[in-house]
Amino acid sequence: MIVLDTHAWLWLVGDPGRLSAAATDAIRDADRLLVSTISAWEIGTLVRRRRIALDRPVHVWVGDSLAALQLTALAPDTPTALLAAGLEDDRFPGDPGDRLIYATAVQSGARLLTRDERLRSFDAERTVW
Image (cartoon, one colour):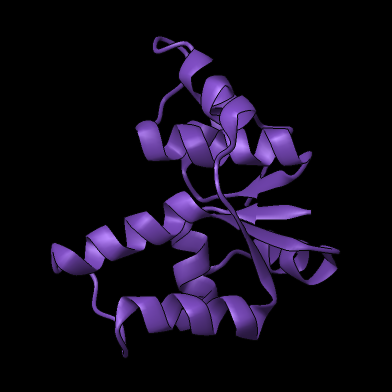
């Protein structure tokens, strides 16, 4: 299983050439692809702030991409939220969204597909790029 970080989800849909060869292989070989619902929130926020543009309304884009790629969206449950909250500030490099996405991967027993070098340095075994 693979959890896609937000940028990986965006690139898989809109610009797959930005994915590394290892990322592409991991996606191809995964028995299941997951995203955190936090990524949908991040994408919606990026659209609202005009940092990215999508070719359709964000709620349609999210629904279409979930269906087209057979992605499973996971909402943070209580154990995931507590794991994210417990990540030590001086060791974990990410913002709250990163914490929840990383915790989703851990709780799911999945690898996290991310280009974020800080996350990859934090947990090289759990991450792939």
